[in-house]
Length: 292
Image 1 (cartoon, rainbow, N blue to C red):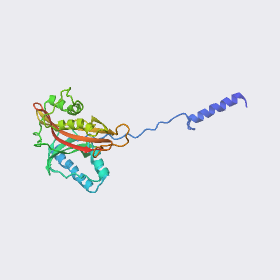
Image 2 (image 1 turned 180 degrees about the vertical axis):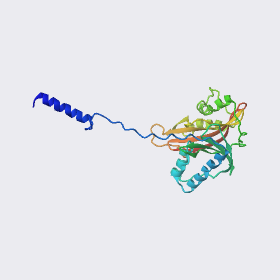
Image 3 (image 1 turned 45 degrees about the horizontal axis):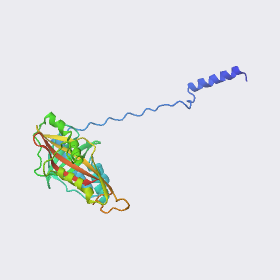
Image 4 (image 1 turned 135 degrees about the vertical axis):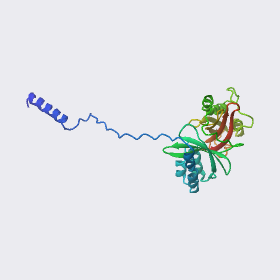
């Protein structure tokens, strides 16, 4: 076939491809994904919304009664998700008492609130709005001493105190990792934080000749603080203790396993604190639970 004819046929084939013919193999056609609906913003809480949201505890009680571990996981968030899941899956017990008779702490920020349930015994709870519904984020945190009462409606804290409240988790972390007190973080005599530090320092000696390392870190999430007065705030945060226990050199088994913990176990400490412009930081509630 003459070269001129071959060139003409090649040109016609290219035109055919460009006018409804087969798309060349090296041409990629991008598919446009349908737009996703924006997530609804977390709601601002008032007394009329806090009361039904507190009903999550009733739902949780029913899930515990049925040993519905999936339901428990769905109704919890933040610190409570690993604690409730571990209690349900690992031991199939540990159903907490159903608390009632609440008063509410309503923060300025949307998406969370706290409650003090006065029956059967005073305890604090934190509820968070996540994935379109209210869930239990922390609690029950047994109250220590006289329970804290909510501030007057519309009360706001001094801006400097609000800034300081955001640093409360870091103060907890610093205190527990600075036994010499070089950084100047202090707690009053008898405060549970002092007892927790003493326990962390004493545990390695208690399990000798085994070796024990304890790492202290904060659980993800901001400090949740609500004004009680112009010069005081109630603050919630969570500390994670990770234990790594190993046999002494030359042995394969532990001599003194930590009770309730695996050799690489995790414990969560939920903390409720009052930050005062005049009295500093005081722990008003603690709850400890094994997460894994």
